[in-house]
Length: 206
Image 1 (cartoon, rainbow, N blue to C red):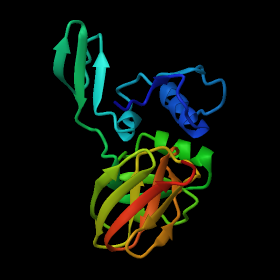
Image 2 (cartoon, rainbow, N blue to C red; image 1 turned 30 degrees about the horizontal axis):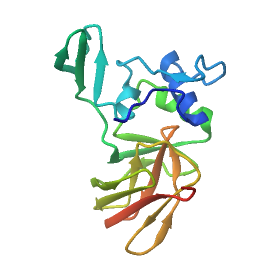
Image 3 (cartoon, rainbow, N blue to C red; image 1 turned 60 degrees about the vertical axis):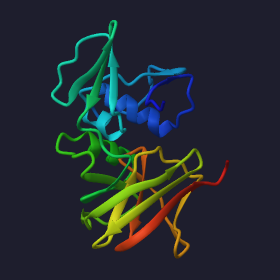
Image 4 (cartoon, rainbow, N blue to C red; image 1 turned 30 degrees about the vertical axis):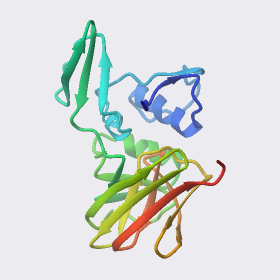
């Protein structure tokens, strides 16, 4: 079972800063991070929880949030389903360019930011609407993710896994290598030409 928290997990500095800003409720990524071996995002009301793909929340307390619906209860433990969870792979309707990390965290923490519809992208100077279409994960493993993308116009695909430089991406039918941009501060994004494509994300260090 995948989780956004953990005891003594391996996590990147970007992810640590993302979680800290989310917990603080403001674009502050300065140390101290208040966790070292244990990373525990716990604010279920935060919209960025949706962006991280949290579909279920376990709680010992009753949770009263419109987006969380109780689906199971065992003893004192209650399980809630998040109705606003963002798909692991999605096409952004709008791309917002960020100058650097500080600018990116400010933009995703802005109340007007729409997780799952907008994407804040570092290193890509294009801003505005993107092509509509569909994205479906065909294969997901520790070192490879394959996504089928259908686009009417050029678009931008977001994979809500952590950005890391050793990961690469390409369009399988043409072999065209794609640049993976840091997206929404800690995630991955690639620009995709219009048409139907199989996009492969693959690790180069495993």
